[in-house]
Image (cartoon, rainbow, N blue to C red; front, side, top):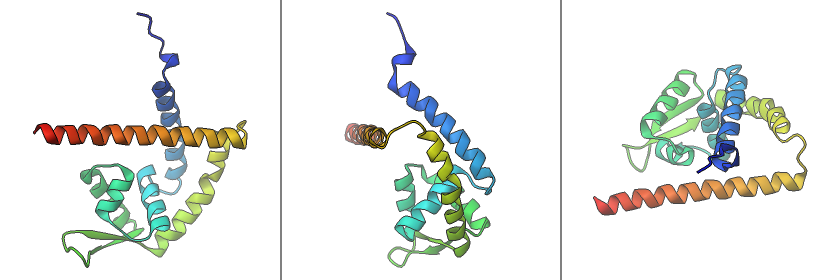
Length: 155
């Protein structure tokens, strides 16, 4: 059997994602942030205050990872954390003014990176690529949820 990794979509997505992640990490280091912290800021700006568990689910990360992100952002005074009114065990994550201002600067500062990424693509090609990537994401999430469901049933 001949193996040609160059024909694997997942390989190319992985390589591209790795390069993009490194570029974003380099840019975000200018703001003393990680990609994960920038995503939290984005989620809070666009979806308002959220329970820590909601953020965790939206970012597709584990609880222990979320705890580390939250702790580092609290130290930087980008967010506040309060007990939820609904369930004292749950924590509400609140964006501070410092966090809001930083997210605005980030959004503007990384816009050129997205333009560079899509250089040479027509608007139609960009839209097709977005549709395809969103479908891949949906497929992966459904597959993961199906595996988690199957594991729970077999236990």
